[in-house]
Image (cartoon, rainbow, N blue to C red; front, side, top):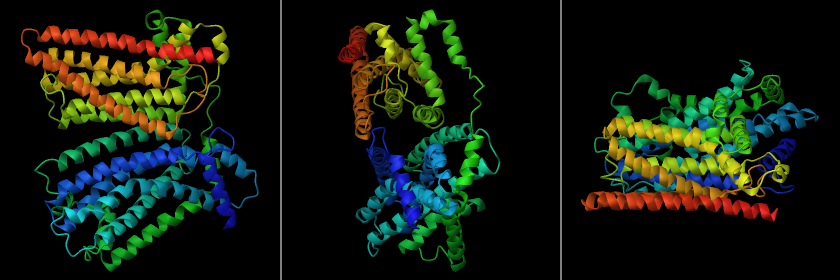
Length: 552
């Protein structure tokens, strides 16, 4: 057991170690905790407020936990898939321990402990906020008197921990089974589509739930599933664990019988123990052997082929095309980078689909500060932040010798062309999708064109400032990678920028509505001011890059 504990400590340090020798970074843990805590605090508080006055305590607790557990199911699935290579399929770690005389069971136990550490972190980040909300629920629930909300919140935290561990183990077992049992040779290509679908499902489900809870027609999740509950619903994990939570809280003693408790306990025991037997080093070696790429196979990218044919239109120099191609291929081949950028992209697609089928979009000229416009700007701006920070932060190629052959102007053009990958493959498609969604819902071409023209200019200004903040030489590794606090500050800056953009759009469109005679004149003067501001902001990254080059 001591050997397993020592291996576990080593694996934890291996996961947290940075490129600087002897340094341990807890930034990733801090980022996970902070982001999930804030997100679930807003979600759980909104659910609690909207449900508090409609139902009794039993229904409130069941509905509250069912909704939280449903979203956690998707988030757990997505997170385990994203981190599957890091936590399970780590070839360096497997190569090291396969060469050592380490007992297979001890390695499996240490590997499982490392996995559980990550899962406990997830559970804490997901469920600490709902636990706090339940602790404060006695202040806004009419039937709260006579019940201990400290006991209820503790029961929720314990149940949610069991839930997250069980679902995580289930996903882990499925992935190991797919890799080991079916001998899938391209498991990574299988994982990525499910990661994208998970992101889509998470955001889409959240929007549907948010719409459901903000309408007066909702009857509550418990009533929704208790009036005419389909048989298969009773086997859903979130349904089962919601019943466990209500049972443990003391509010619903009759929801589980003795046989139910025995069966649930047996299933939990199986899920808790079984990963120890499948995380053997032999199983992981077999999966990794199936994932070896074919070195003789050359990948061809249609997008690059098209751009090369029209290189004189899109690129000012050969170095710009070379950097564009380097960044594009790097993003295509590095799965972790691809997931980070595609996650923001897929969320934008989910927002567009939600608008198309469920949201009543209003004329953006008449109501610029609307729910639809705010969500569109948030998705676009966060795509910029995610794309620029990821591209700048994950430059693992080194080619400083190129700077001896190209001047400062070409270096800036090359750096900008690398980030044009983000515009060509993410931002422009998202803008076009939102444009057609607005056009389908409203059917008014002129105001939509004006609105998207202003939106594009504001987006480009924001892009220039993000590029300015995180600018670096295009063919060199970052001197210091962005810390978790930097990423959190970037997200806060993005939210502030969205608020400024909404206020600016309200002011611009107000000229058209308030001043009938001079409205268009004021509008185009403001538009000209924005264009000048965009051109000026585009020069700032160039100046910063020249200073960096002069220092080197």
